[in-house]
Image 1 (cartoon, rainbow, N blue to C red):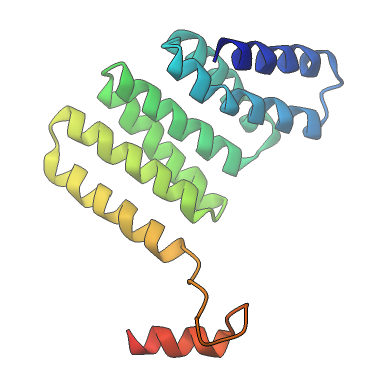
Image 2 (image 1 turned 30 degrees about the horizontal axis):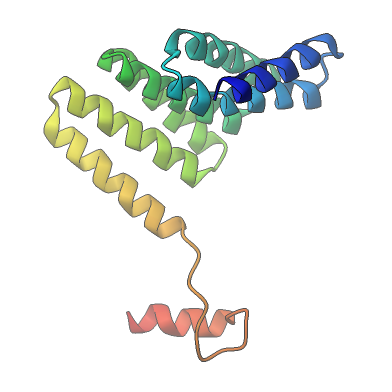
Length: 167
């Protein structure tokens, strides 16, 4: 994990020296998001939060609601990890709002999941249950249908609609 983190941060060093184009900033945001897993594994949450804060600023600067929703959801998870439920709920709610603007149902589900986690941490169990159930429903509705064993791949739309009507 240390090696992965070093390579990601090396890539950030390179991107910081490039012209500030939208493409470069998008890659910088994505690299900072990718640092989440190795930094959590290393329990280096302070460095992670610094990268997430920078990523949020960059996503705001370029007006990328989808990337901002993802980063805000990751920040909600960070605040949950360090037992800051109010900050976690605030980030999660903003992630949900940005995901709606980006029309990104999976990112909305991610924000709703982290909101439910934060509400559980705070002791708001009924709200947590409602949001976690909503997360499961959103994920289920966003999943692609499984291929139909009786059709030639890929399944035809008429086959999918027949299967949906039967269920």
